[in-house]
Image (cartoon, rainbow, N blue to C red; front, side):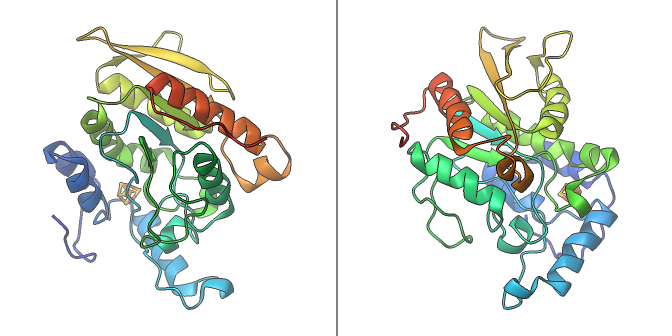
Length: 260
Ligand code: SF4
């Protein structure tokens, strides 16, 4: 499924390719070949050429970053997009930037990650019962994808959530952008989103029903562990652990008692 990184693609590549994929593993491979957004392709490759001084010895990933974690996870965490010198460098979401340091430390404290730090794709990190993914798979300039880029990338997330559906019980949504991006995706994949749409907030909790069964999917909102939110203590490590703990409890994923 993996193609040449230089293969020309139209903006419809995700909408044509994603529905054909039969497993999360296939999806992870296919998304990493995507070049549907010209601005983001240029940005991710520019970041890899210019690099940051601290990372000048790195061979950047410089491709779309796939989701990470078990393909039968009962709990999903959805962020925004990779960082130019974080996930776009290391090839793993939330890895190599301060946001990821906070997130993986919280997951480790709860027993949902095998290591407190995620540094690169070969570091042995494992997640337990949790999969992290995102509505935009390429690093955007200033961490702000356009609505067109968000919509172009949507089929990847829609297919991933369909493939995770048999086990998925809860999603922790980090940040308002992800919340806004996710609701229409869930709506088109058979989940009944309450009307009016539930607003985002830290601690927000919405329940979506499956039109075809009695199943319920729980959405929990949490502030994004951005450097700004963490440095201003808008989001503390305890707040992040708390929302992840709630999500894990709802999804019936075993956690251990966090420190302190
Ligand atoms: S943001 Fe999504 S749709 Fe756009 S190039 Fe990256 S993977 Fe493809």
